Length: 324
Image (cartoon, rainbow, N blue to C red; front, side, top):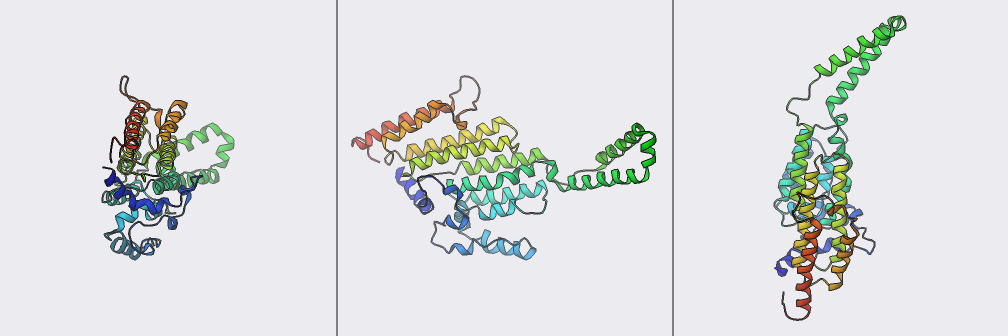
């Protein structure tokens, strides 16, 4: 099993070489996260032109390229571009972007966790806007109508306002309520809850593909904690509205790390397990906070169990009792 992990992680090792002691890889630009496949990155790193011709060019020559899934697993450059478009977009647009790139990532064996960490940091603000009514075109339209109604009322009924302010504001409020009631969502646009479900599907799919290089155990654990905090921020920003959804993502992330430990035991020194235990004992990890029903094994207990089992395998390996 270790050999399988090593083969997979050779692909992302080039992306990890830039990791320093201060663990700043998550801030690297897209050009610094190199494509692990022997292929000219400049073919993929060109910005998308959001015109009919530009979109067709991207789909035909980049997205459909047989190596694009491997590039995307290491670099979310285009995905971020789609989500951060300047012009207001419908919630259905965001759903289509999530499906488009989520489906492409299903072709990849893994996702680079450092590129993923950077991507989460970049897209959180625009996802928050997408989950707000203020971001939608229909909100802008309604805002314009209300402003126009109030302005015209002041021009046409200013004397009425001075004579009977209470009656004036009563009539104005009825006009505004009528505007709100007659303004409908764009036909076919997704609701906020439907969009949140799409977010959840995308995050579950991608978190379940994260993998770390066997000899980068310290950086891997730091990265897990950072991603855990970033996922918690999605809930704080109301991008995810259900704590159970957040807990599901925490569990998926934790299980990926437990799998990593199990597969990388031959590369991990015994001292590292104590580092993780100390973090568990501080009880200051968002990743371990939310829990399921009573009597179900907690995430802290699950991680402690994984550490105990893997540490035993590590000791056995270093003693020559166990071979990888």
